Amino acid sequence: MEKGLINQFQFLRSGTIRLLETTSEEKADVIPEGFSNSIHWNLGHIAVIQERVLYGLGLRQKPELSEEFISHFDMGTDPKKDGWEKTAPSLEEVKKELTRQLEQFPQTFAGKFDDELVEPFKLGSVEMKTIGELFSFSLWHETLHDGVIKGLNYALKGQSK
Image 1 (cartoon, one colour):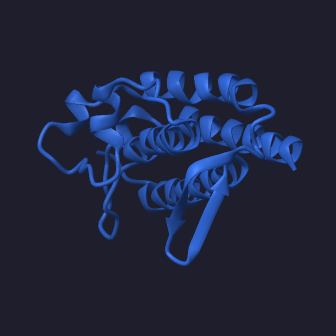
Image 2: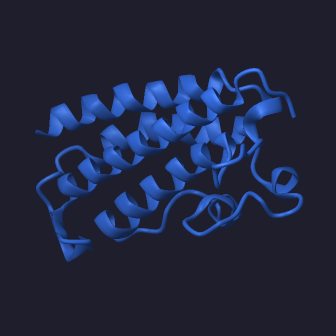
């Protein structure tokens, strides 16, 4: 199971980074009607939640992301605030963090997938008890946001800021 999840993470994260690389600066912060967030926000949010879940809940360690990075992309943050795109970490900084995770996570979590959590993580009716279960959840979360990014790209097709 561990090798399969690591392979899925590497495949998925490489795709997320490709989505970032094909996003123009012009469209990164546009929020089309019917959407609550931008491509930029979704990409940063992927990095934040993955670290919060895997480091915070899984390893009981502080995420390696800066507080500034987290404050822009955490759950409940709002890229519709005036000036958000001017104060948020750049797309290049987001790419740096997504790439760091791609390189670091396989080594950090190798051999730990069966480790029991100090406290189970409950999400609705689901209860996750191991780091491997959290890792699997984080892949689902990234896939969800990749889909939103693809929807944003479709909605922005032909638009400019």
